[in-house]
Length: 320
Image (cartoon, rainbow, N blue to C red; front, side, top):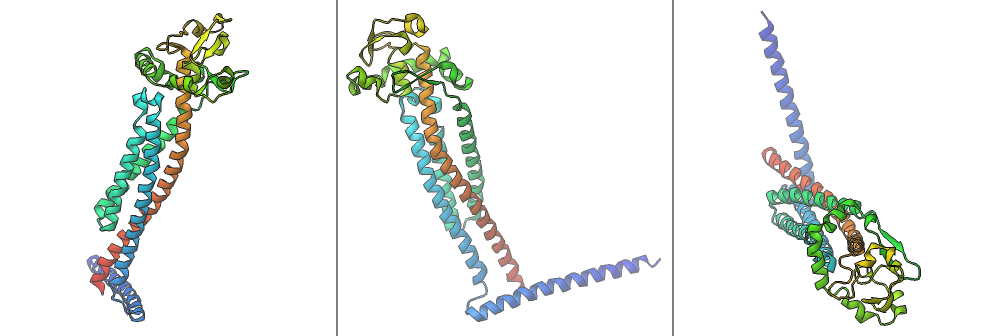
């Protein structure tokens, strides 16, 4: 029958204890802020507000760094898109450029949010930047996986390499060399100045054999070396001595609109070009993504600190 009495007593003790603890916390913060106030002669609200300002300033600087990181990403994407092989393969042209532009826009949004203390805009920035960094990482990993295999081989007496189609990843071969895609790519390559440049840069056979020509030029603008054709100029070859050495030997044509654009070796040269260019671009992208991750982690910490200081300020206003 006395259970309700004990329950009431227990609740009373808990209530008094909680009140005591809250009073001690209030007294501790109040005394600490008063000491700072008396020593520095500053208003009490200065400390939480200034801490929030510092956090937001840090976030603004970090967003400016992220903005700067987007520039080399856009530049790398633009460089890739400007290459003749990427001009002929539209699916490979714009992903890096688009990601760079999105990072630039999100960084600007984060900078505005930090500068004018727009917490909702900062939260939006952190959410979007996490997605963009993840997409950039996925693109990097994917690019490394599909360009890992190298179909090149050294040719005796030549300063350039030649390429085999079966030396590249299945995914690259399927996307580039399928009959549905290659017809358009072939026409695009024939309309470009990839092979015309060779006639402008090289005159003699020695110059050509010792030159630094691209994989695309080595396999699309001339017949395979194994065929034994004799050099006249970079895109004109005659009198083969070993036409059975490679099926592409029969496909070579001195017609400047044909050359070796129908050859499997040309497809291999295109893949070799793609691999070489993406490997170069990946170096820039790796540096950019490392800096972006570092910036993002610090920005998250600064955002949490700003949120904590804002919460502390609200509670303090009720205590002091």
